Amino acid sequence: MDSGQGILAIFKREWYRISTSKICIWGIFVAPILSLILLMWMMDSGLPSRIPIAVVDLDNTATSRSLIRQLDAFEKTNIKYKSLSFKEARHQMERMEVYAVLTIPQDFSKDAISGNRPKLVYYTNNAFLISGSLLFQDLKTISTLASAAVGLQTAEAKGFTENQIMPILQPITIDTHPIGNPWLNYSVYLNNVIMPGILQLIILMFTVSAFGSEIKSHTGRRLMEMGNGSILKVVIGKLLPYTVIYLLIALLFISVLYYYNRFPLHGGFWPMFFNYLCLILAAQGVGIILLGIFRNYRLALSIASLIGMVSFSITGFSFSTLAMDGSLSALSNFFPLRHFFLIYIDQALNGIAVGYSLYQYAALLCFVVLSIFFMGVLRKMLTADIYEE
Image 1: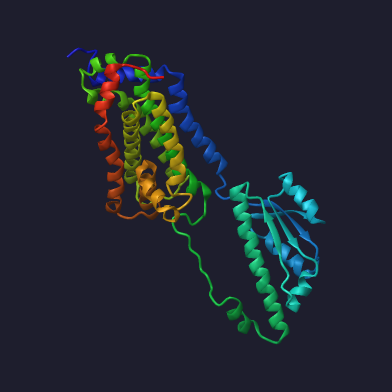
Image 2 (image 1 turned 60 degrees about the vertical axis):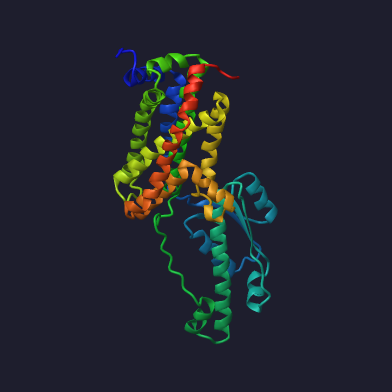
């Protein structure tokens, strides 16, 4: 066999193309590593804390001051300003000096004891979703505590003991134990899916580009000659260098996430390694499928980027697929990242037996099997060597 032909020759040729292309170097190497560094640095503290808010205390009594001290004691809340009016506090929020405003009305304590049901009014800036949500949680909690405190004072004034009052104020005691991520660490919650999602997006785009660029530069026929007319040899030789690189990047992700940062990995190394491997192969399969369906390099590349971006929303890690419309919930199964996410939950967070995740591993490999049926179309595109604008 000619040394200029076969899988090894195509592998060497593609490796040279990658190493001499600025787009490949920045897109395949720099982008995922830079994303890892930035995301890990941004979420280094795990959960936002001491988020500044403003309080407008129009009551200024012992009860309202006690309420403010309790709120300031919360880990996520920092009462940075005690404004004299709501107008002043609103301007502080508009200038992004604070992310929430709590207003305690005049005669709050007096009305509460007399049973006039005063209102605690608070505003949160949900343009910043995480900060707004966390502050909303704290402000809602302090409102509940204030209501209970007023009820306790009123009942004690009527002669009831604390043991008689508490079963009425809090008939059910809640003992919360978050599983999987007991620290409520946002880095555990987000980075374990965002980083593979970025990797999937890169794989989709560069898989389409690997073959589409051959058609654009009119080297498709030469490539088929190097593969002795076998599209399978061409696909293996073209994608193998990328697969090796993506696997090394995946190992970097695993090392940083699970061993350096000590994120939960209850199932051990191998289930997550095979999870990444299957995701890489599945994303490459989807890239071939897109070229086979649309038969146009530019259109397939656009759809690949669209699928990569939609994956972040439809995967289910930020909004449960069970709460989605039935059609969207079913559609999520056609995205490789969805199955990666389910394996991650079962193997890294819950540490259940690998057998329970075999369906998800098989689903990822189905994308590879399905891509085989589109290799005939890809062979015709490379042989025709016609680039459509």
